[in-house]
Image (tube, rainbow, N blue to C red; front, top):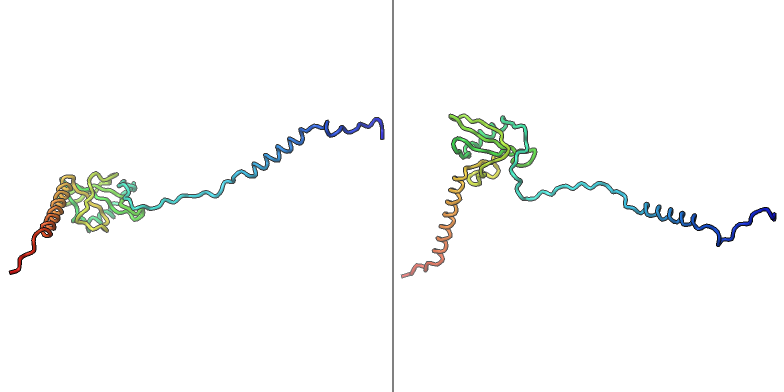
Length: 172
């Protein structure tokens, strides 16, 4: 061996820095590899519930020819207040009553106007539930019908009680 050739330093004098750098790099790469990867996007489909939707118009372009045809078949159920009524028409594309109209009657001629929402209570008696039109009634007439319905129900309850509490007829 040459005396000019440097001797390698003893292991106790070697720098520990490269070892720590390599350890940090390996640990960092391991953490990056363990990070959660974005999975496929999950699209939530709303579940149809049985609550009735709010009555708000969804259609912006009214089709009055279709309304006129349906009106000719169902107009006898309209409840008029000062020759005005409101109707909601079934929209098959949406699957609910989504088109709302005000109907004006002048000398037997009907005029239709698209409106954004119904302003009167919906008629719930005397019309088939499968009708393509929902008819409205004035507030006063609705209250009168509800009062009459309550009186009939109360009378039926009272008659039922009387029949149960009355003594059976005597046999001679």
